[in-house]
Length: 363
Ligand code: TRP
Image 1 (tube, rainbow, N blue to C red):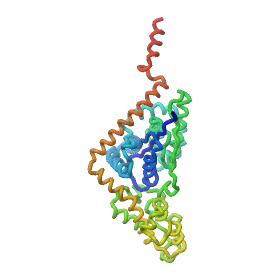
Image 2 (cartoon, helix red, strand yellow):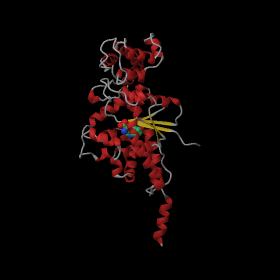
Image 3 (spheres, protein in one colour):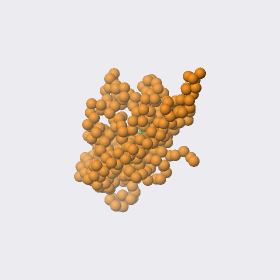
Image 4 (cartoon, helix red, strand yellow):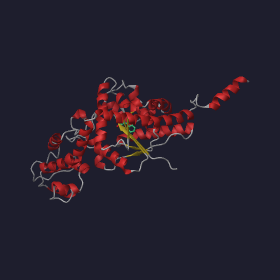
Protein backbone atom coordinates (compact mmCIF):
# COMPACT_ATOMS: atom_id res chain seq x y z
CA UNK A 1 0.00 0.00 0.00
CA UNK A 2 1.36 3.43 -0.92
CA UNK A 3 1.58 6.26 1.52
CA UNK A 4 -1.74 7.90 2.34
CA UNK A 5 -2.22 11.37 0.89
CA UNK A 6 -3.22 13.69 3.68
CA UNK A 7 -3.96 17.39 3.50
CA UNK A 8 -3.74 19.68 6.49
CA UNK A 9 -4.11 23.42 6.58
CA UNK A 10 -5.68 26.10 8.71
CA UNK A 11 -6.11 29.71 9.74
CA UNK A 12 -5.77 31.78 12.86
CA UNK A 13 -9.26 32.80 13.95
CA UNK A 14 -8.47 36.49 14.52
CA UNK A 15 -11.05 37.89 12.09
CA UNK A 16 -13.70 36.98 9.56
CA UNK A 17 -12.30 35.62 6.31
CA UNK A 18 -12.24 37.90 3.28
CA UNK A 19 -12.06 37.37 -0.46
CA UNK A 20 -8.26 37.42 -0.27
CA UNK A 21 -8.53 34.23 1.80
CA UNK A 22 -11.08 32.93 -0.66
CA UNK A 23 -9.02 33.28 -3.85
CA UNK A 24 -5.74 32.58 -2.05
CA UNK A 25 -6.74 29.43 -0.21
CA UNK A 26 -10.40 28.62 0.46
CA UNK A 27 -11.38 28.13 -3.17
CA UNK A 28 -8.44 25.78 -3.68
CA UNK A 29 -9.25 23.81 -0.56
CA UNK A 30 -12.74 23.15 -1.83
CA UNK A 31 -11.32 21.98 -5.18
CA UNK A 32 -8.85 19.70 -3.41
CA UNK A 33 -11.64 18.38 -1.19
CA UNK A 34 -13.80 17.57 -4.22
CA UNK A 35 -10.94 16.19 -6.35
CA UNK A 36 -11.05 12.80 -4.65
CA UNK A 37 -7.24 12.69 -4.84
CA UNK A 38 -6.71 12.74 -1.07
CA UNK A 39 -7.34 10.11 1.55
CA UNK A 40 -7.92 12.59 4.36
CA UNK A 41 -8.38 16.34 4.62
CA UNK A 42 -8.02 18.33 7.81
CA UNK A 43 -8.81 22.05 7.99
CA UNK A 44 -8.47 23.63 11.39
CA UNK A 45 -8.70 26.84 13.33
CA UNK A 46 -5.36 27.61 14.96
CA UNK A 47 -6.84 29.29 18.03
CA UNK A 48 -3.80 28.40 20.14
CA UNK A 49 -1.58 30.13 17.62
CA UNK A 50 -3.98 33.10 17.49
CA UNK A 51 -3.61 33.42 21.26
CA UNK A 52 0.18 33.71 21.03
CA UNK A 53 -0.25 37.39 20.25
CA UNK A 54 -3.77 37.87 21.62
CA UNK A 55 -3.35 36.42 25.07
CA UNK A 56 -5.08 39.39 26.67
CA UNK A 57 -7.93 39.24 24.20
CA UNK A 58 -9.39 35.73 24.39
CA UNK A 59 -12.89 36.98 23.61
CA UNK A 60 -11.73 38.08 20.15
CA UNK A 61 -10.50 34.57 19.38
CA UNK A 62 -13.63 32.97 20.83
CA UNK A 63 -15.92 35.13 18.66
CA UNK A 64 -13.93 34.49 15.53
CA UNK A 65 -13.87 30.71 15.93
CA UNK A 66 -17.56 30.60 14.98
CA UNK A 67 -17.15 33.29 12.28
CA UNK A 68 -14.38 31.33 10.58
CA UNK A 69 -16.31 28.07 10.91
CA UNK A 70 -19.23 29.75 9.12
CA UNK A 71 -16.84 31.07 6.47
CA UNK A 72 -15.43 27.56 5.92
CA UNK A 73 -18.82 25.94 5.61
CA UNK A 74 -20.27 28.65 3.41
CA UNK A 75 -17.24 28.58 1.09
CA UNK A 76 -18.03 24.92 0.47
CA UNK A 77 -15.93 22.89 2.88
CA UNK A 78 -18.07 19.86 3.52
CA UNK A 79 -17.79 18.16 6.92
CA UNK A 80 -18.59 14.85 5.26
CA UNK A 81 -15.34 15.09 3.31
CA UNK A 82 -13.19 17.43 5.38
CA UNK A 83 -12.49 17.20 9.09
CA UNK A 84 -12.96 20.68 10.57
CA UNK A 85 -11.46 21.09 14.02
CA UNK A 86 -10.06 23.50 16.59
CA UNK A 87 -6.39 23.34 17.57
CA UNK A 88 -6.78 23.91 21.32
CA UNK A 89 -9.03 20.88 21.66
CA UNK A 90 -6.24 18.53 20.60
CA UNK A 91 -3.80 18.42 23.55
CA UNK A 92 -1.56 16.01 21.62
CA UNK A 93 -0.49 18.98 19.48
CA UNK A 94 0.94 20.75 22.51
CA UNK A 95 2.55 17.56 23.71
CA UNK A 96 4.34 17.09 20.40
CA UNK A 97 5.38 20.77 20.33
CA UNK A 98 7.16 20.28 23.63
CA UNK A 99 9.40 17.54 22.23
CA UNK A 100 9.90 19.37 18.95
CA UNK A 101 11.29 22.31 20.94
CA UNK A 102 14.39 20.24 21.61
CA UNK A 103 14.98 19.71 17.90
CA UNK A 104 15.24 23.42 16.98
CA UNK A 105 17.76 26.02 18.04
CA UNK A 106 16.93 29.55 19.12
CA UNK A 107 19.09 30.95 16.33
CA UNK A 108 17.27 28.86 13.74
CA UNK A 109 13.97 30.30 14.94
CA UNK A 110 15.41 33.80 14.87
CA UNK A 111 16.20 33.32 11.20
CA UNK A 112 12.60 32.48 10.22
CA UNK A 113 11.76 35.41 7.90
CA UNK A 114 7.99 35.26 8.44
CA UNK A 115 8.36 35.42 12.21
CA UNK A 116 10.91 38.23 11.82
CA UNK A 117 8.48 40.39 9.83
CA UNK A 118 5.61 39.59 12.16
CA UNK A 119 7.66 40.61 15.19
CA UNK A 120 8.40 43.96 13.49
CA UNK A 121 4.76 44.46 12.51
CA UNK A 122 3.62 43.93 16.08
CA UNK A 123 6.26 46.21 17.58
CA UNK A 124 7.25 43.45 19.99
CA UNK A 125 10.91 44.49 19.92
CA UNK A 126 12.33 43.06 23.14
CA UNK A 127 9.03 41.90 24.61
CA UNK A 128 8.34 38.97 22.29
CA UNK A 129 6.15 36.36 23.99
CA UNK A 130 8.00 33.01 24.02
CA UNK A 131 4.89 31.31 22.65
CA UNK A 132 4.78 33.66 19.70
CA UNK A 133 8.46 33.24 19.00
CA UNK A 134 8.10 29.48 18.99
CA UNK A 135 4.87 29.21 17.03
CA UNK A 136 6.68 27.72 14.02
CA UNK A 137 7.45 24.74 16.27
CA UNK A 138 3.83 24.35 17.26
CA UNK A 139 2.90 24.69 13.59
CA UNK A 140 5.31 21.86 12.78
CA UNK A 141 3.52 19.77 15.40
CA UNK A 142 0.13 20.62 13.85
CA UNK A 143 1.36 19.22 10.56
CA UNK A 144 3.36 16.25 11.82
CA UNK A 145 0.70 15.03 14.25
CA UNK A 146 -1.58 14.30 11.30
CA UNK A 147 1.21 12.91 9.12
CA UNK A 148 0.16 15.46 6.53
CA UNK A 149 1.80 14.97 3.15
CA UNK A 150 0.43 18.14 1.59
CA UNK A 151 0.03 21.58 3.12
CA UNK A 152 -1.80 24.08 0.90
CA UNK A 153 -0.78 27.56 2.11
CA UNK A 154 0.32 30.95 0.81
CA UNK A 155 3.95 31.72 0.07
CA UNK A 156 4.32 33.57 3.39
CA UNK A 157 4.04 30.16 5.04
CA UNK A 158 6.94 28.65 3.10
CA UNK A 159 9.46 29.12 5.94
CA UNK A 160 7.09 27.28 8.29
CA UNK A 161 6.86 24.27 6.04
CA UNK A 162 10.63 24.28 5.53
CA UNK A 163 11.11 24.35 9.29
CA UNK A 164 8.61 21.51 9.69
CA UNK A 165 10.54 19.44 7.18
CA UNK A 166 13.78 20.04 9.08
CA UNK A 167 12.20 19.05 12.39
CA UNK A 168 10.66 15.89 10.92
CA UNK A 169 13.96 14.92 9.28
CA UNK A 170 15.81 15.42 12.53
CA UNK A 171 13.19 13.48 14.48
CA UNK A 172 13.30 10.54 12.07
CA UNK A 173 17.11 10.59 12.02
CA UNK A 174 17.34 10.34 15.81
CA UNK A 175 14.37 8.12 16.60
CA UNK A 176 13.80 6.18 13.38
CA UNK A 177 11.26 6.64 10.63
CA UNK A 178 8.11 7.79 12.39
CA UNK A 179 6.91 11.11 10.99
CA UNK A 180 6.20 12.32 7.46
CA UNK A 181 7.94 15.19 5.66
CA UNK A 182 5.21 17.41 4.22
CA UNK A 183 5.20 19.20 0.87
CA UNK A 184 3.93 22.73 0.45
CA UNK A 185 1.19 23.30 -2.14
CA UNK A 186 1.28 26.91 -3.31
CA UNK A 187 -1.67 28.67 -4.98
CA UNK A 188 -1.68 28.06 -8.74
CA UNK A 189 -2.80 31.48 -9.99
CA UNK A 190 -0.27 34.28 -9.49
CA UNK A 191 -3.04 36.89 -9.10
CA UNK A 192 -4.13 34.91 -6.07
CA UNK A 193 -0.86 34.85 -4.21
CA UNK A 194 -1.88 38.05 -2.54
CA UNK A 195 -5.00 39.96 -3.43
CA UNK A 196 -4.47 43.68 -2.72
CA UNK A 197 -6.93 45.69 -0.61
CA UNK A 198 -9.71 47.66 -2.30
CA UNK A 199 -7.54 50.79 -1.78
CA UNK A 200 -4.71 49.28 -3.84
CA UNK A 201 -2.50 48.67 -0.80
CA UNK A 202 -0.47 45.48 -1.01
CA UNK A 203 -2.41 43.61 1.64
CA UNK A 204 -6.03 43.20 2.56
CA UNK A 205 -6.25 43.75 6.28
CA UNK A 206 -8.89 44.54 8.82
CA UNK A 207 -6.86 47.35 10.36
CA UNK A 208 -6.57 49.08 6.96
CA UNK A 209 -10.33 48.80 6.38
CA UNK A 210 -9.76 47.65 2.80
CA UNK A 211 -11.34 44.18 2.89
CA UNK A 212 -14.30 42.63 1.19
CA UNK A 213 -15.56 39.93 3.57
CA UNK A 214 -17.18 36.69 2.49
CA UNK A 215 -20.00 37.63 4.85
CA UNK A 216 -20.51 41.15 3.38
CA UNK A 217 -24.07 41.69 2.08
CA UNK A 218 -24.49 42.25 -1.67
CA UNK A 219 -24.95 46.04 -1.43
CA UNK A 220 -21.79 46.35 0.65
CA UNK A 221 -19.79 44.45 -1.99
CA UNK A 222 -21.28 46.68 -4.68
CA UNK A 223 -20.28 49.81 -2.74
CA UNK A 224 -16.74 48.58 -2.10
CA UNK A 225 -16.20 47.69 -5.76
CA UNK A 226 -17.51 51.06 -6.94
CA UNK A 227 -15.05 52.91 -4.73
CA UNK A 228 -12.10 50.68 -5.58
CA UNK A 229 -8.66 52.05 -6.43
CA UNK A 230 -7.81 52.00 -10.16
CA UNK A 231 -5.28 54.06 -12.15
CA UNK A 232 -5.13 57.61 -10.75
CA UNK A 233 -3.87 58.96 -14.09
CA UNK A 234 -6.90 57.53 -15.93
CA UNK A 235 -9.10 60.59 -15.55
CA UNK A 236 -11.13 60.96 -18.73
CA UNK A 237 -12.68 57.92 -20.41
CA UNK A 238 -10.54 58.64 -23.48
CA UNK A 239 -7.28 58.53 -21.44
CA UNK A 240 -5.15 55.42 -21.84
CA UNK A 241 -5.24 53.39 -18.61
CA UNK A 242 -2.62 51.32 -16.78
CA UNK A 243 -3.25 47.75 -15.69
CA UNK A 244 -0.31 47.43 -13.35
CA UNK A 245 -1.30 48.18 -9.76
CA UNK A 246 -4.88 48.61 -10.94
CA UNK A 247 -6.90 46.77 -8.32
CA UNK A 248 -9.96 46.30 -10.50
CA UNK A 249 -7.95 44.37 -13.06
CA UNK A 250 -6.09 42.38 -10.41
CA UNK A 251 -9.46 41.30 -9.02
CA UNK A 252 -10.67 40.44 -12.52
CA UNK A 253 -7.58 38.25 -12.94
CA UNK A 254 -8.58 36.43 -9.78
CA UNK A 255 -12.35 36.13 -10.31
CA UNK A 256 -13.20 36.44 -13.99
CA UNK A 257 -13.87 33.41 -16.18
CA UNK A 258 -14.43 33.52 -19.96
CA UNK A 259 -18.15 32.70 -19.62
CA UNK A 260 -18.69 35.88 -17.59
CA UNK A 261 -18.27 37.95 -20.76
CA UNK A 262 -21.20 36.33 -22.50
CA UNK A 263 -23.35 36.97 -19.44
CA UNK A 264 -22.35 40.47 -18.39
CA UNK A 265 -20.21 42.13 -21.07
CA UNK A 266 -20.90 40.56 -24.46
CA UNK A 267 -19.10 43.34 -26.38
CA UNK A 268 -15.80 41.74 -25.39
CA UNK A 269 -14.62 38.21 -26.12
CA UNK A 270 -12.38 37.87 -23.09
CA UNK A 271 -10.29 39.61 -20.46
CA UNK A 272 -7.44 40.29 -22.87
CA UNK A 273 -9.74 42.28 -25.14
CA UNK A 274 -11.05 44.28 -22.22
CA UNK A 275 -7.52 44.99 -21.01
CA UNK A 276 -6.42 46.05 -24.49
CA UNK A 277 -9.29 48.53 -24.74
CA UNK A 278 -8.53 49.96 -21.32
CA UNK A 279 -4.82 50.40 -22.13
CA UNK A 280 -5.64 52.00 -25.47
CA UNK A 281 -8.10 54.48 -23.91
CA UNK A 282 -11.82 54.89 -24.41
CA UNK A 283 -12.97 52.55 -21.64
CA UNK A 284 -14.26 54.10 -18.42
CA UNK A 285 -13.57 52.77 -14.93
CA UNK A 286 -17.26 52.57 -14.08
CA UNK A 287 -17.97 50.12 -16.87
CA UNK A 288 -15.15 47.83 -15.72
CA UNK A 289 -16.25 48.14 -12.10
CA UNK A 290 -19.84 47.23 -12.97
CA UNK A 291 -18.54 44.15 -14.73
CA UNK A 292 -16.31 43.23 -11.79
CA UNK A 293 -19.20 43.68 -9.38
CA UNK A 294 -21.37 41.31 -11.45
CA UNK A 295 -18.58 38.73 -11.65
CA UNK A 296 -17.92 38.91 -7.91
CA UNK A 297 -21.57 38.72 -6.95
CA UNK A 298 -21.89 35.55 -9.01
CA UNK A 299 -19.15 33.96 -6.92
CA UNK A 300 -20.19 35.42 -3.57
CA UNK A 301 -23.97 34.95 -3.76
CA UNK A 302 -23.99 31.15 -3.28
CA UNK A 303 -21.52 31.58 -0.39
CA UNK A 304 -23.83 34.12 1.26
CA UNK A 305 -26.84 31.85 0.78
CA UNK A 306 -25.09 28.90 2.40
CA UNK A 307 -23.96 31.15 5.26
CA UNK A 308 -27.53 32.23 5.97
CA UNK A 309 -28.57 28.58 6.20
CA UNK A 310 -25.78 27.68 8.64
CA UNK A 311 -26.44 30.84 10.68
CA UNK A 312 -29.92 29.49 11.38
CA UNK A 313 -28.40 26.49 13.16
CA UNK A 314 -25.41 27.67 15.21
CA UNK A 315 -25.60 24.70 17.63
CA UNK A 316 -25.34 22.50 14.54
CA UNK A 317 -22.16 24.30 13.53
CA UNK A 318 -20.64 23.75 16.99
CA UNK A 319 -21.63 20.10 16.70
CA UNK A 320 -19.74 19.84 13.38
CA UNK A 321 -16.64 21.30 15.05
CA UNK A 322 -16.98 19.01 18.05
CA UNK A 323 -17.28 15.90 15.87
CA UNK A 324 -14.30 17.12 13.84
CA UNK A 325 -12.26 17.51 17.02
CA UNK A 326 -13.04 13.92 18.00
CA UNK A 327 -11.87 12.60 14.64
CA UNK A 328 -8.77 14.81 14.69
CA UNK A 329 -7.91 13.84 18.23
CA UNK A 330 -8.00 10.17 17.38
CA UNK A 331 -5.60 10.70 14.47
CA UNK A 332 -3.22 12.83 16.55
CA UNK A 333 -3.32 10.37 19.45
CA UNK A 334 -2.31 7.53 17.15
CA UNK A 335 0.72 9.50 15.95
CA UNK A 336 1.61 10.50 19.52
CA UNK A 337 1.61 6.92 20.63
CA UNK A 338 4.12 6.14 17.86
CA UNK A 339 6.14 9.19 18.87
CA UNK A 340 6.22 8.06 22.51
CA UNK A 341 7.37 4.60 21.46
CA UNK A 342 10.07 6.06 19.24
CA UNK A 343 11.24 8.41 21.99
CA UNK A 344 11.21 5.65 24.61
CA UNK A 345 8.76 7.45 26.86
CA UNK A 346 6.17 4.68 26.68
CA UNK A 347 6.90 3.25 30.16
CA UNK A 348 3.52 1.63 30.73
CA UNK A 349 2.91 0.28 27.24
CA UNK A 350 6.22 -1.48 26.72
CA UNK A 351 5.97 -4.82 28.57
CA UNK A 352 9.52 -5.83 27.69
CA UNK A 353 10.78 -2.77 29.56
CA UNK A 354 9.18 -3.89 32.79
CA UNK A 355 10.45 -7.44 32.42
CA UNK A 356 13.94 -6.21 31.62
CA UNK A 357 14.04 -3.93 34.63
CA UNK A 358 12.58 -6.56 36.91
CA UNK A 359 15.29 -9.00 35.81
CA UNK A 360 18.01 -6.38 36.26
CA UNK A 361 17.03 -5.66 39.85
CA UNK A 362 16.45 -9.28 40.85
CA UNK A 363 20.08 -10.17 40.30
N1 TRP B 1 0.20 30.12 10.41
C1 TRP B 1 -1.00 29.89 9.65
C2 TRP B 1 -1.61 31.26 9.31
O1 TRP B 1 -1.30 32.23 9.96
C3 TRP B 1 -2.02 29.07 10.39
C4 TRP B 1 -1.55 27.70 10.71
C5 TRP B 1 -1.27 27.19 11.95
C6 TRP B 1 -1.29 26.63 9.79
N2 TRP B 1 -0.85 25.91 11.87
C7 TRP B 1 -0.86 25.53 10.57
C8 TRP B 1 -1.37 26.52 8.40
C9 TRP B 1 -0.50 24.32 9.96
C10 TRP B 1 -1.02 25.30 7.82
C11 TRP B 1 -0.58 24.22 8.59
O2 TRP B 1 -2.42 31.34 8.42
